[in-house]
Amino acid sequence: MATESRTTSQTPALRRDRQLGMYRRAIKTLPGGTDSNFRAWGDNTIYIDRGKGGRIWDQDQNEYIDLRMGYGPVILGHADDRVDDYVNEQMRKGVSFSLTSEDEVRAMELVCELTGWVEMARMTVSGTEATMHAMRLARAFTGRNKIVKFEGQYHGVHDYALISVAPDDMSELGDADKPVRLAWGRGIPDAVADTIVPARYNNLAQLRRLFEEQGSDIAAVIVEPVMGNAQGIMPQEGFHAAMRAMTEEFGILLIFDEVKTGFRFGRGGAAEYFGIRPDIGTFAKAMGNGYPAAAFGGRRDIMSQLPDKVSHGGTYAGNRVAAAAAVKTLEILRDTNALETIHATGRRIQDGLREVLNPSGIPYVFTGHPSMFGIMFTDEVPTEYRDWARSDHELYDAVALGMFARGAMPEPDSREPWFICEAHAEGDTVDQIVTIFEDSFRASLDARARGNPLQVGDETGHVSAG
Picture 1 (cartoon, rainbow, N blue to C red):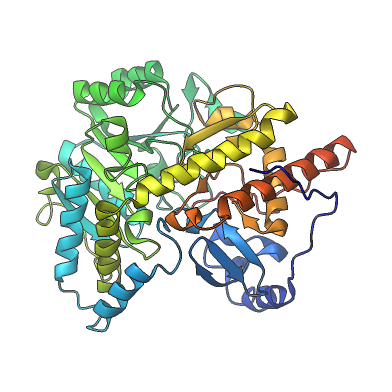
Picture 2: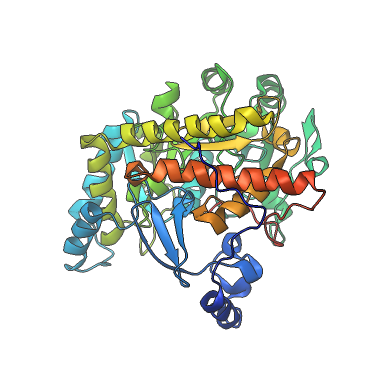
C-alpha cells in the first residue's frame, strides 16, 4: 500500500502568509486568536477556508486529508450534500422560535430507535451541555451528590467535568491506589470539584472500594465507553458489564458519554457495541455531521423528572438547523451502509500503517475502534490514562506534525485519535494517508537517529476536545 516512499529529511514548507496575518488580526479581539483553547496554537494556529468530503483547505490554500474531522462530528464528510440540502430547505422556514418543530421530535425518535435503549431524550446544543444535564438528572433522581469520573476522560468544559482530565505529569493525579481530584484550570470552586470522585479506568477493584466507602452519596458513574481523550483506550474484556452490575448493586446510575462514540461505533453507538444498557446517555458530534446538535436521554422514569422537577432549557436547544441536520444524518446512518464503509476504511488504513510500522521494530499498539483509533508507541497494551504517559508520545506528536506539511492532518497531540468519515473511502485517499504517514514517520526516526530534537506540538500544551 505504501511501497514507494518519498521520504526526505527536509519537512516540506506550508504556505502561511494569510494565516499569519489572520492570527495577528484575531489575537487583538479573540484570546489566543480563536474561540477555543484547543485551537490556539500560537503562530501555527490554522485558519480554515473550506472543506469537502474528507479534505480541508486552509486560508493559504494548503490542502489536507482531514483526520480530525472537527474532533469527530463529521461522520459522512464535510459539506455532505444530502445533509446540507435538507438543512438549507428547512432553515428557510426560520431557525429559532423557542417553539418545537417536527424535526426536533423526529430527531429524538431516531435517537431512541437507533440506540434501542433510550426511551426519552431532549436536544441541547453541545456535548458539554448534554453531560451537564445528565449529571444533574442523576443527582436529582437519586438524591445523592457525587459523580464518579475516570482519570483522563473528557466530558466537556463545565465545572463538574474538568476534574482529572489531562495532566502531562501523572504524579499530579496522586497515588495510584487513591487518586486525588485535580481541577483543570482556575475558576472551579472547591465545593464543585469536591462532588467529583476520580477513579482509574479498567480498575474494577478500586471502583468497588469507592462504592463501598462513598456509595451512599454517589449518584452516578459517568464514563466514555472508550477513552476518547487518550487515543481511544479500550475497556478490558468484561469491564463495562461488571461496572453495570456493580452500579445496579449499589443503586448508582450509569451514564454513557457517547459524545464521541455515539452513532460511530455502530448505529446504537458504544452501548450496542459492548452490549450494555446504561441509565442515561449523552450524544453529540456524529449525530449532526458537524452541525451543533447534541442530546441527552435515557430511562423513562429518569427523564420524566423533566419538565417539572429538574431544570433544562436553552434558547437554541433543538433549533431548526441542528434538528434538521440530526434527522438527515441519523436517517443516512440508519438507511445506508455508511458505517460499514467507515469501519472498513479504518481497517484498510490500519493495515497500511502496519506495513510501515512492523519493519521498523518500533513497538506500537492500535487503540480504539477502526472508526476512531490511535497509534500509541508503546510495548504494552494501555488500559488507563496513566499508561499514556509511558508511551513515546514525543515521537507520535512529531510524526503527526510532519504529516501536516505533507498533506494530512491528524491532531498534533497524541491523546486525540484519528477520526474516519465515509468520504475517506473515495479514490486513493487511503493510500495517500499511509504514504504521508510513512514519510513523516521515517523523517522523524531519521531526525532522532541524528540526535536532532524532534519538532513536536505547540507551546500551549493543548488537549484536543473540540
